[in-house]
Image (cartoon, rainbow over all chains, first blue to last red; front, side, top):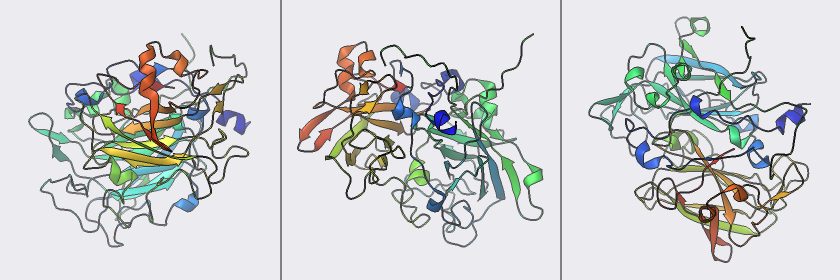
Length: 243
Length: 199
């Protein structure tokens, strides 16, 4: 049964749940968004299969960004970021790779192209990864990234955010998104966040403070669940036209 | 009035941004030492069966500029058309590769094995192809496309058959430039815009 679900067609992507590709308020999208419609077709084996990564890939500190760069502690507000990876059918997505990257506590990335004044933290690299457990659960220990300015309109600041990359079990489920933090006033001023036109979909990118998972005298916690495309489960499959 | 559906909505995509390399290929980005090596350095290992090929190209934005910051992932079957994990698949073909445009020239290179045709559910075949996913700053949802080969029989392919404007089929064709060498350019917007897929 599990095997047949794994090879079932993917639910077509609901593009209205995603950002608009072309948004003049986010200037770079104007030269990088396709102008012609996407070709929409039923998924095939090429989209329904995907790379799998084993738990052996993951090192002991890969999901702890506070220590995984040098072994010494990074500067910043210590936070646990945790959640589950589910699909649109509400099923857990176990054993899937989750990668994150982020700026340091001052809002600076460890990247040759980032020239913001905020200093690099010698003990912060800014990347982490883990593989979900049997319930689709994941956890990262990190520091809260700082907000930072970027060139777009006259005075533009990114809200605090963590980038997420998730695989699922099918290449067609591949997703990159960003997690924002509850209460950040910059979210509603951000043209990148505002590319998501469905308000409830934008709110679903904002992680709530989760005091139940916070450890006294140690770290705060934020919860961020991620939903990937699901698979159709009918027993009545017709031959799609031409396929 | 009506029962409630229990289905969830997919999490909204957001751009991978200019620093996607830190998260996905940190050693390439200069953040060495966190992982032993970057994920998906090669889709094949020594001993992979089939013809080893090299595909070179660039990702152009709507002004014709070769983007320096694009990151790509490819997913493909082995020379027999089987994906990793399927019964009988070549153990030396993981099928997955991560590669990026060069920061100076904007050119990317994918070295892999030429994939075989893939059986469809209805008993037909898809022509040999490599699936590609492109992310970068300014791309709000990752773009899917496919690399087909201009020296293969592509007539029966069900995806290519659905492209109404036939000249656009060429945007999905890697052009043979020599023995085992192909050129595949991706144009995000405008003239000769690549066909992007929603599958």
